[in-house]
Image (tube, rainbow, N blue to C red):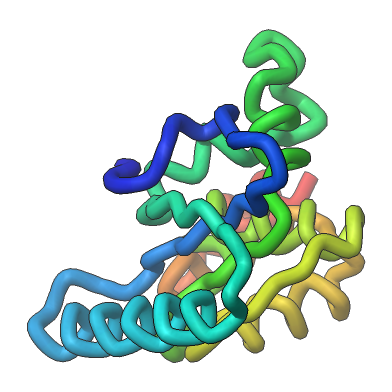
Length: 163
């Protein structure tokens, strides 16, 4: 969900636009980390002495900015919103997995493809690394989204998921 700033697609003349993504969890510790990350971003933007509009989004709200190749019916508004962003700041909890944070992984993949300016903290580096190693592919692990033991995996079901 977005809050603060302007609508996704709007930008005043001569004004840069930045997206701040809060991909931290909901625990008290994650909320403390998210507040620290946002404060750091705001301080850096203030020091830049440039007019920069900052729009907030959590991972669920990223649908305003991401577009997958199979989502033709969604139209192009998300691509236009993404294109209008000059900077993207992503704060993510450490250990976030690409297959459990699909919107965030898609955003990172789009940033990598378009060479969009991104500053990330925490698990963002892991997601970027994974995106490079997987060549941007949508990977679905056979041992489940949380990585259960392979001994617990029904290989017949896993083989169907791989096809």
